[in-house]
Image 1 (cartoon, one colour):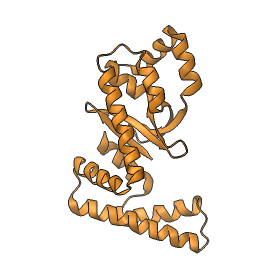
Image 2 (tube, helix red, strand yellow):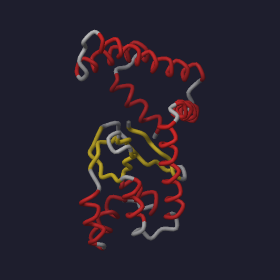
Image 3 (cartoon, rainbow, N blue to C red):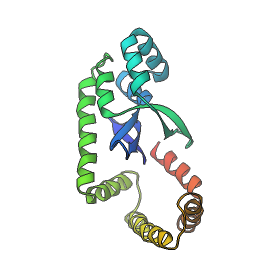
Length: 195
């Protein structure tokens, strides 16, 4: 699940890792937020060279995770879990470090709360859709389509449809019917709206 999180109105790309049950956040985005650097990628490279222990830590512990770029394409992006970010943030001279740690703890808490009470995820989705300017009618239709898709995929499983390519084809057809766009076109539109 790709998602954009906001810290002080600045975007941080993130992906939920279901296996680890943790968020993986874009390290470059975090560096950009904490340093206000024009080129956070270069800042990160210099930081890793200056602090060899940190550089080794990042190289060993921080995976490259597929995330959406501003253009809507998926690219492998250096990422870190909240625990790893706490270690990295300590090495960045920034007045924003402490507020960022508090924000990060709140993000983690919200997700854990959502795991315990899935209805909170639905409420968060509704708030996010409102923030993005969608109408009540659109939001209700979207939430109904999610429920419909769940029921539909359950039926597909019963009918022996294999997950993977067959699901993708059927999902693409379904998405085109309700949105007028293919899945790829719809995702690209959504990324542009978020940015």
